[in-house]
Structures are given as structure tokens and as C-alpha cells.
Length: 514
Image 1 (spheres, rainbow, N blue to C red):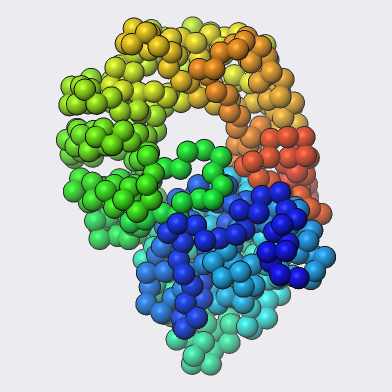
Image 2 (image 1 turned 180 degrees about the vertical axis):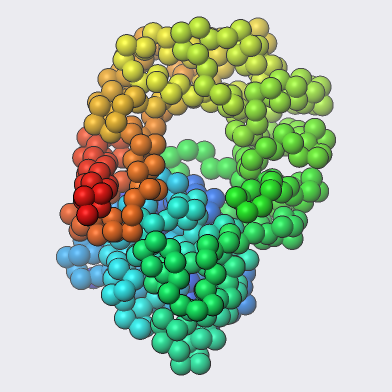
């Protein structure tokens, strides 16, 4: 059966159709076919900046063609299984198992649980040790790669740190080793010896010690010291399915344990902003990176962005900017272009007190509105507790109504809730808490409530500390149909997350007993 016929039977066919604006046209003459993969569904994967950066980086290498494949939702997974088909790439709709390299992005969420399920959907053996000589090379990188023991036995190479430059060396070394007739393990050994940040778990004992000569341990992070010369995409795919407004993300700064904070120059940041907006048509720019307010040219950079974006009515999101820096900068930004209000999306750098919102929080919100802000994101870590619904609603109203002093209107507040307690009580509390807060707010449309996965931090922390033996449990969860998606906040999602939590607990207990 053809792919189009299958897509007519699923709920969200656009997830798998491909053909988006700025997607690459695959080359049939490439010396290396790469698929950038993500262990969550399309809507989540396309919001992950690591996917976009790696997709563009691989495609920029000579002789390389880059495609994408993401976790398949249950309805299409069932159809693929019925017709004995594997997951396919979005660009060419060819079997993802036929690529030379599968580069999996490891997000900083429990969706890393889905790595064996993703591999199974594609048709690749989940355990690296069980793969044939001609199986795709499975590479992994991303935020979770800093503590990757839980998935170490599922991948061939983990690139720690900043992978954009490392993948070029990795690709050349892998191709050269295979062309020389080296078997899979020998080729992986060559990759580990030459590529910065490359950890090949098969060459190391369970405690990390290498059992092969010439392998460095601990593996240092791959680091790009000069960000102006480091790779950064100049375009992004315009997603076919987007639960939130798409935005052009520009990385201003970067830090790793092995390197201090580094900054791109203001000129480079501005060039990237212009290039991305021209290529995508997005109406929102997000500045990304740690300690942006300490950029050497920070005030002038924001003033210049203010002038450029205000002319087009584009929004500027600076979620990493501390509240103190915002209060200093926002009045100046307002003076820069007083006749051209520009929407901002701002986030306080610390949770606000639910019971008694501090006066400076309202002053901060008013300053943001005066600078043109239309949307403010606030974090209420225990706001999902039904017993604190009134306090949560009071906080949201105070932030929204701070705009009245500016133009007599209400601002828009995005209220992010984190349920208290572990996964099970957390899911139940989230449902009850959201209902209680909505009841307090009544029919107000100025406050939008979103929920963070209950028990998310607890599960992720345990997953980071899990031993390599937990890979067997993750494979079993995938075989049983459990998926931990960032989109799953319903009762079915609750069962999946609880299964992951129980699997990690069980394996940690078993290892301790042994």
C-alpha cells in the first residue's frame, strides 16, 4: 500500500506529509544519507532547536543529504505494522532504515524513553550490540547526552557537548573506515579516537573505563570556542502542524561544563535575525542562550532589534532575560521607538509568590506593557494544587491588570503550572487544579493555562541517574506500547508516564540488591 493511502487513514496526516517550506530536497547522488530523528511526535520535534540545527548542519556538508524522521503516533504505527512497513523519512518517504546515519536528538525530557520505540518503528535493532554490519550508524546528541547512561546501549555513538562541528569529522572518519573495509566495531573505534566529544559505549565498561587502547576517558565535550565561526542555520522549516506560534530562534550565547559562556557578536546576531525572518516569514524572534543580559553589547543589540522588528510588528521573545535586567532595559526600549509598539514575551527569572505577589512583580509587568509587551509568561510551580487555585488566579489577574495603567486594556498571561507530588498524584492534581483555577477566573480570556508534565522533573532526574541496565526496561516499555510524549497530559498519557517511573524504580532497586 502506498504512503498516501495510509495517511488518509490517520488523524494528523500533515505530521508525515513533508514538503514544508524550507525543507531540503533529498539528493539521490549523495555519498551519505542522514536522517535526523527525534523520539517525540512532529509537533514536539519541530519545536526542538537541536533538530533544526543538526538538520541544517548535516545538509551543509559536501556530499551529504539530510532528511527527518520522528516518532510515529499510535494510529500510523498500527497501520505500518499491519502492512509490514517501517517508519519513513518526511523528505523522500523512503524507509528510514535505509539511511547511512540516523542522528537522534536526545531532548531534556522523559521522551528519551521512546528511543527504543523509535528505532523499532524504523526497523533498527534497539540494542546496538544486536545490529548487523550494514545497519545505519546510530548517533545521538542533545541535552540528555550529558548524562546518557540510560540510552548508552541503544546507540552507537554519543556526541557530548556541541555536535555541529563534530559531525563533519565523524562523517568523514566513518566513511573512510568503511571504505577501507573495517568492520563496524573497528570503524567505531576510529570514530572515537578522532572525533571530539564522541563516546562509543561499546568500547567502554559499564563503569565508563575504556577497554580499547587510544580511547580518551572521560570523553571531553565538543566545544566551538568562536561562536561567530560556529555553524548556525539561516533558515528554519515552517511546520505543517504547530500547536504554538512558530518562532525564529537565534542562539546568542552558549555554555558547557568544559567551556565558559561564549557570545556571538551583535552584528552576527542581527544578520541571523534578518536571514531567518526573510526565509520563514515568522512573526516572532526568540533570543536563546544563558546570561544574555551579560552580552558585551546587550543594550545596543536590543535597541537595534527593537527598531528593526517594530517596523514589521514582529515580536521579540527573551525568556532567559532576568527580571532585574528587564526592568532596566524595557523603559529604554520603549523610548527607542515610542510610536511603534512591539509585542514582547517575557518570563520572570524566579517563581512569584502565589499568596502575596510582590509589588515589584506588578511594577515589572507594567514596565513590560509600557515597552509594548502583550504577552507575559509566569511560572506557578505549585499552582496546580487545587487548594491554591484562588491564589494562583489572583496572581494571574494582578499581572494581567497591570496593563490597565498603560492603555486601559488587559494583558495576556500564559500561566504555566507544575503539579505537586510524584507522577500519579501529579496527574490527578493537574486535572483538578486546572479546573479549580478556571472556575476562579470565570469567563476571563486574558489568562491561558498550560500544564507541565506532573512528576516530569522527578522522572527525568531518575532517568539521568539510571544505570545502563535500564535500557532493557525501556525496550520492554516500547514493546508494550508505552510512549512518554510532551503532548500527553490526558489519562492515557498518565499511564505511560507511570510505567516509565515504575520501570526506573524497579531497575534501580534490582541493581542495588545485586
